[in-house]
Length: 452
Image 1 (cartoon, rainbow, N blue to C red):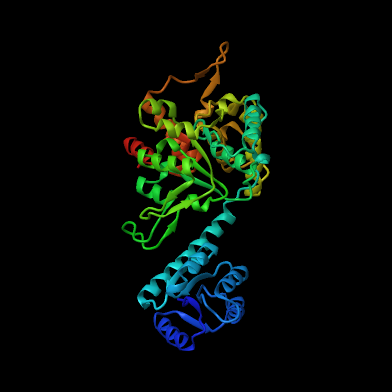
Image 2: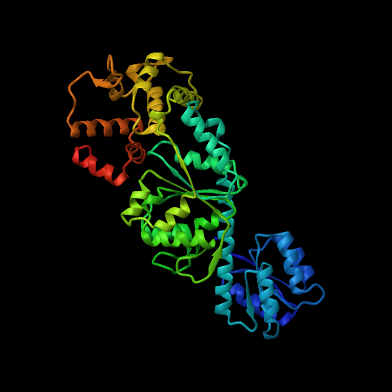
């Protein structure tokens, strides 16, 4: 394992010699210089992880050296070394950007703790930077497909909402595209170059959700062997999208309300306030107003989250968009699979007649499964799930009737579960999303039907 690299900057030669030896025994790779000018040269050449910088130096002073180090290598953490008479200046150096200060003479065990914290902070900052680079989604408008009046109204509302900094509650059925709407709002906002962070609220246990959202300090709970920034910190300057917001507990609701009201929060296990600049988008497929009436969701939080409400229409209400989406998915999947398969008119007719309880996500999985099963150049009705082929339009009313007697409720549930599993190629998580239930509930139903 690579030894952490330190640079000790102090004009006292005896202090440098003794301290460098002691820190070396703690397992650090230590370099030592006596002036600010030398420190800048070493930092530029070696980029140490931590610099121990004396506040009082001949020539270039400690504050000037600190600013030069920050300009040369922003990733290097700096701990100021100061005497009792210059603590105010040391505090000012922290405001400028030093991560900590130590009053000399400092016990070695305490200094080691400060150095370790600085190294952890550096690692966390690097992790946040990597996340920020990878969490900025592109403008998805070219893949946001539809031409129905309902879809055009949705796009128009997104265009008006996106430039504001208002909180937005996105409602709609499972699989309708709520996360895609959130990404498009972010991509059309002034925050587009900053992170877009997605939090699956229903997928995390309560204690883990709070730790993920707000971060924690080292030792805050069993297993917290290092400090961790929260996703609100990762999203600073950008947008955080809280999916399935209706699933969070009253305790998390209270903490979230505080972030909305003050733009501040605390790490789990800390008393220090952290300020962030984050736009909050949320989504749910639940009836939150009904939850408010039942006192399952805080009324004040609901009003804060629903400053603007964007309702995503279900696929069955979007008219001819099924054709456009199916052909778009086929084109994208053909490119991925290196194929050139088309959806036949007969297959499109079956897709148009389906009610799409799993919405756009279900259509995507059905098209993907059909392209995989199709051996020729055209997707035919026999390549589609049996549940789609079993339906036909009634002669007069336009409603759907069955070729065969209606199945029992248990049989219908089993058919639908099998269809979801087939569409998701056996992936239980994706099948659960299509069905609009949790993966735990899907597993329970699989056991009930003897499919496990």
